[in-house]
Amino acid sequence: MAPRKGKEKKEEQVISLGPQVAEGENVFGVCHIFASFNDTFVHVTDLSGKETICRVTGGMKVKADRDESSPYAAMLAAQDVAQRCKELGITALHIKLRATGGNRTKTPGPGAQSALRALARSGMKIGRIGETDPDSDE
Image 1 (cartoon, rainbow, N blue to C red):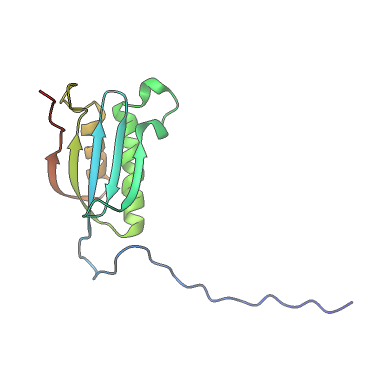
Image 2 (image 1 turned 180 degrees about the vertical axis):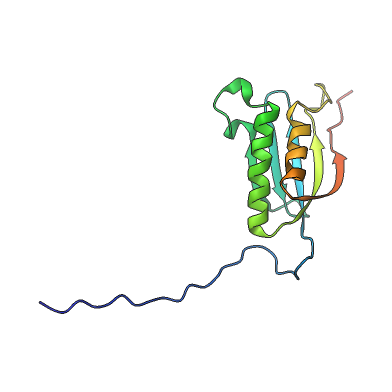
C-alpha cells in the first residue's frame, strides 16, 4: 500500500461583503416597509433602490396566517433584516413607509411601528423617515 498523503493546509482569506469604507463612517441603505392589514414587508435596497439587499416578510417568520400582519411578526422580520444589513456593512437606513393605498386604506398596518422600532433597537441608525403612499384613483 502507498503511504497516505497529508492534507495540505490552505490559507483562509477573509471575505468582506459590502462597500469598503473607513472605520466609523455610516453606510446608508433604504428600508421600504410595506404594512398592510394582511402582511408586513421589510425590504432593504441600496440608495438607488435597484439592488435588493434583504427582504423578509412577517409571513416568513410565523406559521399561522392570522399572525402575518401582527407586530410580533414585523418585529422578527425587522430583526432579521438588521442582522443581514450589519453582515453586509450597512450601518444606517432611510425609512420609506407605505400602506396599501389606492382606493383602500391609507393607514399603515399594525406591523409598521413595531418594525421601525425593532430596526432602531437592533443598532441600526435611522436617517430620514418618509411615507410613500400611492395616490388614489379619484
